[in-house]
Image (cartoon, helix red, strand yellow):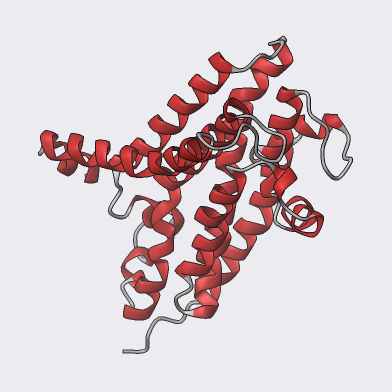
Length: 254
């Protein structure tokens, strides 16, 4: 329904799509301007950082397209409109995700894949079958990890009432962090985003394998291929937290 409503005004949709892509691309423009004054950042060249940027942006874009509206669950909890979703014969999470579905968010996916494609063409890498296969796996598994964080953040709002910005600090904030090489961050932060909130599996670990670079924490190279497994593991507690939050919901009482 929301897609049909959006496509009623195609010119408006195309402008919004372009605006979304251009707005997201400004992050990479800032990185490009930075490299007008330096040759490397944390030992990484511009095409190498473009690989990080493109993969992370595409992953977040996919997750945001499918589950980005989960951050609005706090509003529905406060005004009691979540009740209408509970009486429909459709999973509540699917309804929350589809509520005001914004197809314009494809812009972030398109520009992320565009930067990723440029990075692949500019990198001087021996493209073995394993490295080639790892690229789409990295993007899709990263989207699943970001999606799990969004669902967990939505579940937290059943307790906090409205904590959309807490959720965004891990999704959009995590995306900004992953656009830069892990070598510019402290090891305590690297351990946190590897073993606590496993955002490092979105693109850092797979990208290090693609680029043939060692992990700053000294982790084995085969961990680059476990991103799909990590995505599955984080989706389980996120879904359980969502179910627990939904069971605890008692409406507004009005």
